[in-house]
Image (cartoon, rainbow, N blue to C red; front, top):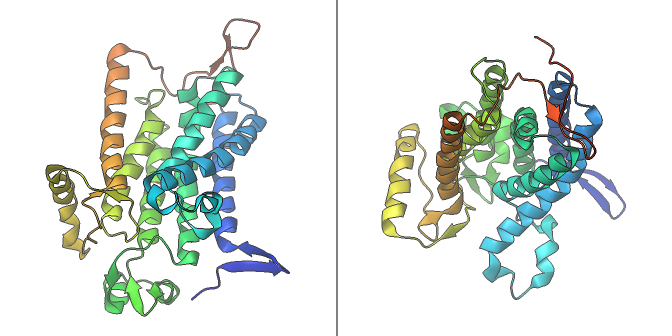
Amino acid sequence: MLNPIAISLGPIQVHWYGIILGCGALLGLLLAIREGKRFGISPDFFMDLLLIGVPSALIGARAYYVAFEWNNYKTNPGEIIAIWHGGIAIYGALIGAIVAAVIYTRRKGYDFWRIADFCAPGLITGQMIGRWGNFMNQEAHGGPVTESFLRNTLQLPSFIVNQMFIDGQYYHPTFLYESLWSFTGLLVLLWIRRRSFLRSGELFMSYFIWYSLGRFYVEGVRTDSLVFAGPQWLASFLKTVWSPMSFFGWGAKEPGSNIRISQLLAVFIIIAAVSFIIIRRKQRRSVPYSSPIETKNSIGPAVQAQQPIKS
């Protein structure tokens, strides 16, 4: 097992998890700044957005998890703020970050969808890197597998195989599945954002579609899914949609209840994102992604920002 603690200074311990998340956030910020410069947006805008978005994401991630695990916290409310004991959810983080971003961009006079498009590659980059924090903590893994599956079928290097040996059993490296899926998604987003057909808001929606699609299938083998008891027809539908993954040797981990919240939310997000794109195109409410940014300050009408640089 790799040591999850990077530095110890007396009682103060710096975990690799935090360092890795910080690196992911920094790289995501640099991507957003670079794209923003093409449209005349100051780097300070994105730095401030990050400073507001990160704590909002942490609050949202914790609140989301606690809400669905309330029975475990209602008798011990002191644990609600103890995020160092584990228990955050990526979808909650996205909700918290989006709420903060909507408020911030409106105060600055920018269209939220334009700014969200610039941030989409950075978001998926942060998730791609951040999953390696789960790897260091030996958490967010999938169900049991054999060592042969990891070494021979997946051809994984020894440092990953060894880290997936937890309490006498090897497990699915779901952190790796999501990280690789996010890396592929980053390449897709970087390609899409230079296409002439792209409209405002659609790169952000493409991020949601891509991430949710991968998360739906990875969630099927996770051992720590948030679950609830729902109608059997819905559980059967989700299981049927997931079932093709058994072809790759993924044995589904049966949850305590029959509905995995992240799977259901992934389906809802994909439907909502596709609907968003279709409706805005029919109503002609969006502008081309490459259009100049318009901002509206508190004392005057909309003014046009610097023309985008062709590349």
